[in-house]
Length: 262
Image (tube, rainbow, N blue to C red; front, top):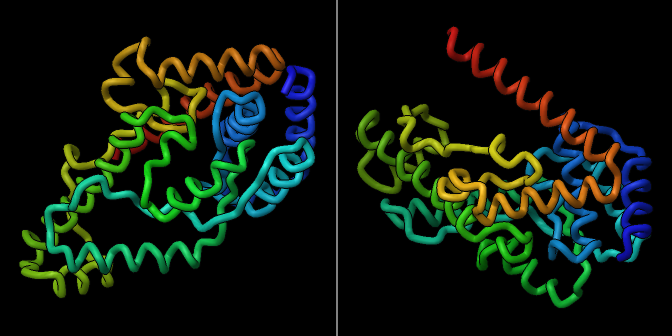
């Protein structure tokens, strides 16, 4: 699309009426708009809407606007977790977890994909099932997506170790019983995922440790490209994003101070 068409798409996204529901973050909404425009511009293969904070009203509005501007849309179930390696615990418990994830996904509702190339549809379906890497579809660095899923595996392994040390769990039956009871365990800081959203605020993925440490990293390049796109289309839109970034950072700082004081 030419810039005039992209500005028209931005205008219609901004004018769309929707109920915020669980989508409380102004920054998240603005970055959703920016990602959809990047898809339309050919800078990003696809945008995934509704995987995190979900508003059915917002998804419906996005679907209507995107389709009216010639973009393709598809609803699927939410992404299943992707395991790049087998977790270091009983595979029978892993299979139970996968089945639980599928059942939870069925209850969660649908997510929306926005894209331009119809040939992406088989890859979208495979990624949704956790069978293939989603990084190429979303235009995110493979290293960042890989670290995200690895962090999930480490957290699962730490949970199982907690079942063993705190409750004396021995096998998959014990792990399943404790998981069903949502038994509390202590997770060390080293095993908790580190989210670095503040490093590159114009992207919706968490940069990996290597990307976060370098202004010349793949994640940094995407961040600056998205910022340039926002500025090129509408300086007012970029200022709105910057204002939302400051508000988000301030809110996180307040939360962190409140936690440290308790």
